[in-house]
Image (cartoon, rainbow, N blue to C red; front, side, top):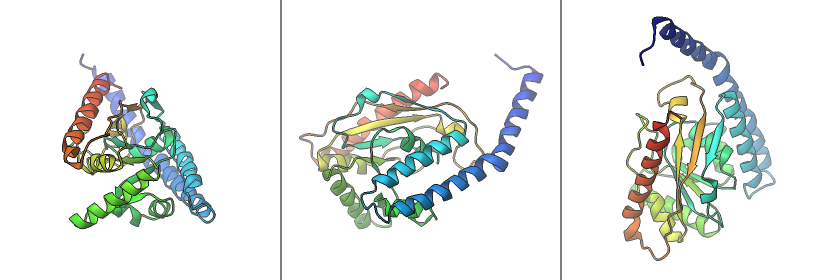
Length: 258
């Protein structure tokens, strides 16, 4: 149904208001929250080498970020979370807000596998380094394999890993092809690969945008994909299964206008 001229004018005015609210209020408050919680995280790292207290700080930071962004998050499919929690959790990557959403809503301790470039960002990088997150160095094939080896060691020690197998944010909101590193680590550690579908974060803060568009968000946990008995030769097939599951779920929920 087409909109009338007054309705179109109202929508344009609303978007302009949200843009200025972002520039003058939302973004400055988010920057202040990141700096403040980053300092607290660094302080806790002095006595907590396990990263558990820093994870709690990150969860608090994430909750504040979402409240500032006026974007409530609903967790769907919590019954699919495996027990024990140790697994590779693979999520689609739509926005800078994906990380706060996952920290805020995944109800367990985990570490993230992310590009090493993030370690150079003040406060965020300091937290990542001191809290035991896993940096992926993509400067060479050897470096990438070494990074995956660190992830496998973390999984074998009982630490769940969260990854973005697309390797970067989507430019269109659609699912991009997946890299097979997550499946490789899951198979090497013989733990499940769990697909996670994020819905709404692209519309909230798409790539190359600098203002927020508040809306409800979803985190949808898919059925775990066992890796028992698999070898690394099965990594590509497992990666495709995860891609298909996330794409199907995203189209289902995004198509409903959530």
